[in-house]
Image 1 (cartoon, one colour):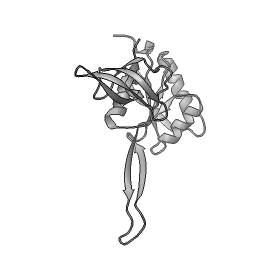
Image 2 (cartoon, rainbow, N blue to C red):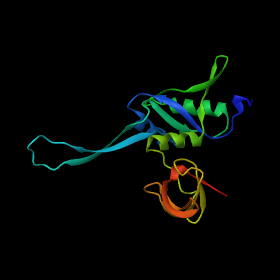
Image 3 (tube, helix red, strand yellow):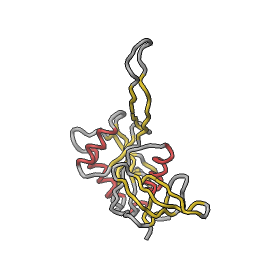
Image 4 (tube, helix red, strand yellow):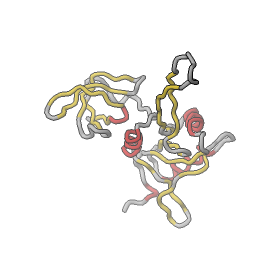
Length: 194
């Protein structure tokens, strides 16, 4: 079993924060240069008016946290001591709403932070239909092959034809049932293939 103090693969730390402050805390951490995210669920609905009102129905879109009081912070992959320093940096400051972290392994009195791999976080976002995690397109380009790692097309290879950075989606052709089929998937589902 590898030593938990020398874990050097990058991933995500799970931090606890005050409820209803996830978005503000993620924005504060991002302004400090720390990559942070929290899954949100978006729903569209139409606002109803009183009976007899002649005003048209309004289409509204609301979002709320998938998991109240938890945010995810990107680690740098330098081990547990660097993770603890990152947690301390997140908790520092007068306006911090971070109250603690989620621990998974304990050695004596020391509780080590739980590190979540990228694939697990992607499955969480995809499985709940959540939004909020963005991925830069620097690792993906047009005419490149990418593996679809999450979702119903998991395991298929996509040849990217178009990347929509604003919508965080990629379109291209994937082989389904022996045929090339046009598909469009979120960027968070894709992993670059060399």
